[in-house]
Length: 261
Image (cartoon, rainbow, N blue to C red):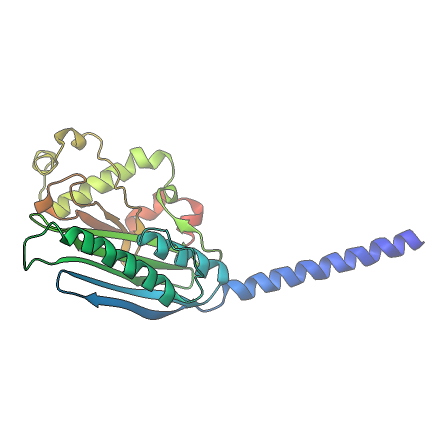
């Protein structure tokens, strides 16, 4: 009899614990995501640095940590302090950037100025995910500077960041190839494979177009793809990019990725 009472008590406790965890997880995932704008600006005669970030301030703690770490990684990923307040993080990277710029400025001609700018802003948000976009420009001397553009999509419930695994394995070499080729034709404003091939640094890429090094990400209009400068085309071509509407790409998304739409 005593054993039965003990077993029943344990069962009731387990049920209550389960209900508590489920309720608690629901509350966490439903915390509204909020940001605050933080900036770093430093201008000197030989160098200037300007950073602006939509820094995660409130929300699901797992999501906050994931986005904050990604932001730090965009600046280099060497910050070891607390992520609670973004000002200290941005000050750390700002000072480091200025030190680097000043080192490069020693080799420049008089009246020349090196620079480093970074803008990390919230690009799009739904009740299921939030997308960030990081755009940078740097000039360290030479004929011209360099720009970058990357994005990242985070699931709100657990902070998961989606990348190439959002596409089913088979589609990456078949259907996705066709969508990428079509998107690049739109970017370069051409119609045929021969015309597209003429824009590639390596003409053989027309047979199997390399996936961008930057991860694709969810936007308001669809999933965006961005190639870096010199990745597949000349500097003059800029950063080839395009967006595939959701209704054209959803069929090749994995179940977790499709659930975000």
